[in-house]
Length: 415
Image (cartoon, rainbow, N blue to C red; front, side, top):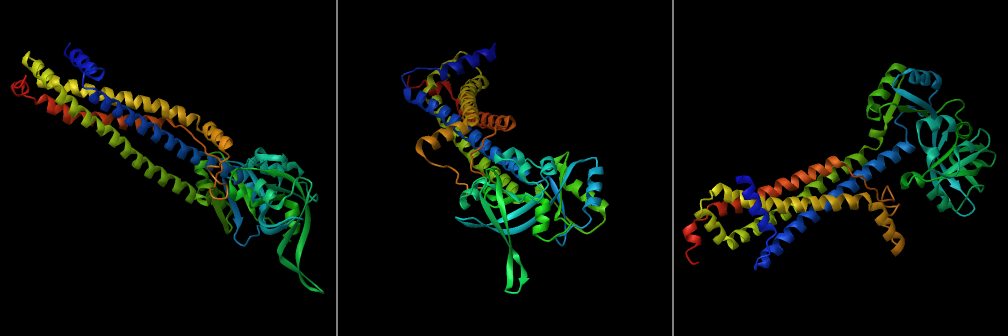
């Protein structure tokens, strides 16, 4: 019964429409402050989580889970290495590749690019390039057809479309009676892909692996083998296991090592943003202190009367803790609701503003991702809500303790 009595009075104080409207205004501001701080933190964490997810997905689309390549750039006995990899239970697919640098020349422009020779069928098993094709398909990369697939930004920069001709020029020359001449070969644009990352869309082009071997004079050699593994987080251990079983001097790499700086920067940014925005929640929560202090001053007579009729100091403390907690709970729940709602629809909202006002929030040539992704992780939402509630509860203790220490005779002296 005592608990219901204290909750009832605390709830009445929150909903009170007394003559002191300033106190009610401060209570509403405290709720609003907590709600905004919680919502902002949820949205920011969701955006950072979205960047992490998109970065991982797009990197894994263009780069395999792991790769093994020759130390000198020429892997001679690729069949043996491929057999060892496919016999590993944790390796799901393998694909050979040839890497090289080239200068692409069209009628309108010139651009440097990384040229990668692939087997279209095997490549589809270790990466998701076929899923990001905007025009054409990887199947056009047939041996001897000398077709090339470009990124959308590279195609725009060179002002070419599917069917246009592109001249591939290599730095390695060939000796002729007229001197050393650069090696060149005409390719036909067979497809255009878009990943949404400037690093790939503007720099990477694909040709058939047999054409790449002819172009770079590699014979039957390749640059390396790309692996798809069953557990992407175990990729470092799996690729080392395959390389050790091969027994030859090779270089191993995996998706975590190749782009580790990206993920480290995201984790550091996420931690810093969480701490900074948590301080905003702290400031909003500690507004409850000023609110309750003013309420305690405003309710001195009520406290004195309650004490006079036998209410214990602990009950007085519970009344004001209840009032402050209600303010914190309402503010937190409102913040969680609007924060999750905004985070779930953030991409649509950003797209609306970009199309309406003709602006671009993320420039592709500045940021690695040109879209603004958002991923709500409810574990993060729960942590944010719990921290906000704990801070709100802590903020109620001091004013409630002051109220519990109120002496009835002093409070009623001038009444």
